[in-house]
Image (cartoon, rainbow, N blue to C red; front, top):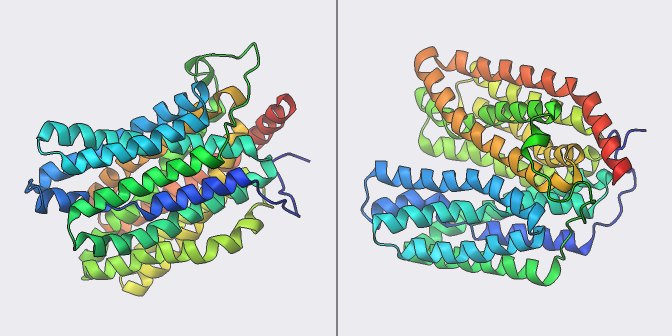
Amino acid sequence: MSAIAVGNPTPTALPRAFWALWVCQLVNRLGSFVQPFLVLYLTQDRLLSAGTAGAVAAAVGAGSVCAQLVGGWLSDRAGRRVTMLICFFGTGGALILLGSARSMVLIWVTAFLVGLLGDLFRPAVQATVADLLQPTERVRAYGLLFWAINLGFSVSTVSAGVLASFGYGLLFWVNAATSVIAGLVIWTMVPESRPAPADDSAGRSLLPVVVRDTVFLLMILIQIGYATIYMQGYSTLPLAMAGDGLSSRTYGLVIALNGVVIVLAQPFLGRWMAKLDRPKLLACSMLVVGLGFGLGALVDTWWGYGVSVVVWTLGEIGFAAVIGAVFADLAPIDLRGRYMGLSGMAFGVGTVIGPLAGTNALEHLGPTATWLGCAVLGVAIFIGQYSLAPALHARAESNAATA
């Protein structure tokens, strides 16, 4: 039986180091106050124009995209633990500098550093889970991390508004403090997990391997397609709802269903998803996301859009739980961190393409064509991902044999 076809019907207890990562993710997200309020801080406290504030926020995003490559490289070369420590302690310092910056040069630089340092941990965490756990346990583990992120973020978005009423400076200090606490959790409870490289693969470069890895490159393209669809929820959806006469408050309530469904449903779905074929579950999850957005072509009421959000959120839960496990199965062990980094960067590319494609399609083609386009793209990436399942099974078995 394939190593990635079916999960363990009686899951074992996850190790202490994993639960430390879980706590770290939760604490880090509980304090994620600055980024959601950055534009408001810059326009209201620093009196910058909306365009300049948006550009500074884009600098954070640019740092985040770069962090995927840098974090992946550091994870494989310096170690997972070192990378996470640099991330959390460095982010704390960068946040304090950004909150105290007065010159535009320092604001630009520190904003980029917040994005760069703040996301270094992503490939490191993904690789650490793959190092610590057997393939049959990875889906459950990645799903639990996804749940911790959303649980923490749901709380932080509410508490950040309260803290902001006492001054934006407090957001920077509390966010920095939670980042340092997350770093201390890693320092005290998470050992280095990077496998010792074999003599014939020690120090090898990523590029020569990647350019010959057709399956991986196709997965990258599919991930960009998925992210392009997913970002419509945060760019095109509010505009489409406004076009139907619905208020921004209504959009806020509808999109809040995303977090509610994740927090309530993911713990119950996690063990069930762990028993399924991972590449095929990934394909079906992408299809559900595409079709969920496609429902937008049929609705014009708040509850209709709410149904759409619930549907694509269920697909998102499956995607988030399994994507890391599939890339872990696919990656050569000595390049695991860098493969995870490239995966994260591909998603970042999709988050740039998605808003541009969706908003322009809405403006020039109308909402019906835009949402139907999401459904068509969802079907296309489903077919592509499902077709790759045999190759992904073969790669997983090959990597397991050489581990």
